[in-house]
Image (tube, rainbow, N blue to C red; front, top):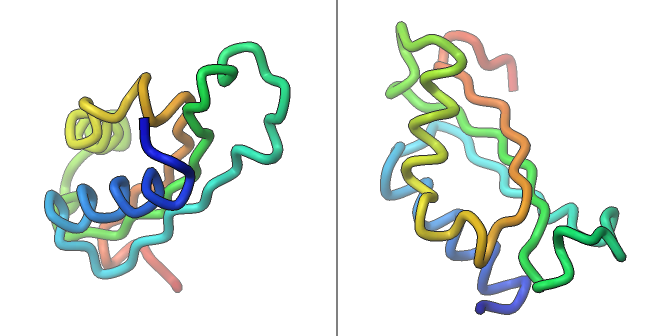
Length: 94
């Protein structure tokens, strides 16, 4: 299992590779969940803001499925919880 900085880098790298994002934020929120029973294994809590042309015309639920699919190997051992905002470039006001 990766340490926190490696885990963050792994998630960011995978999302960049799969979505070629216009904007990407990967925020490690693990410290907010200290002592949480489901995270005792060391897996982290992350929040992702992902803006990609791949989301054009794609429903919100399907966007989330695409992200979960891209991170399927990391879900469980590296990621305990994942909160995400997925936007097409025209929806992003960043």
